[in-house]
Length: 86
Image (cartoon, rainbow, N blue to C red; front, top):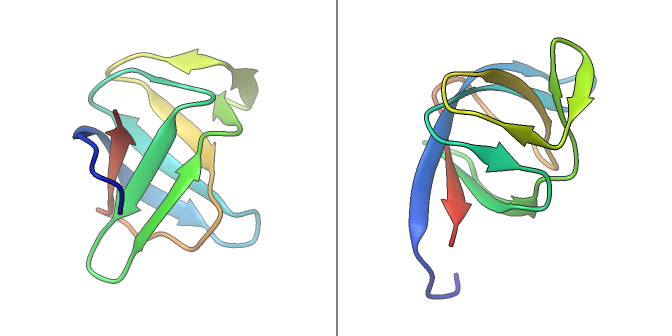
């Protein structure tokens, strides 16, 4: 992993395997285009945020306290932590 700072932005509360979408409870803001790392007991991968939804509507930005649907490149699990790579 490149030397960069990580900022915890949220936690996975649910994963829909059929559509590859994680529900993330945000503790900090997140935007489309941000580079993130998702990490947990058996999860560890980086990706760019390509699409987010709030209540089935596409959004470019989400705020602290919101629950988002996040398209993910790999399988994630409940309680995996989402970090923004700074």
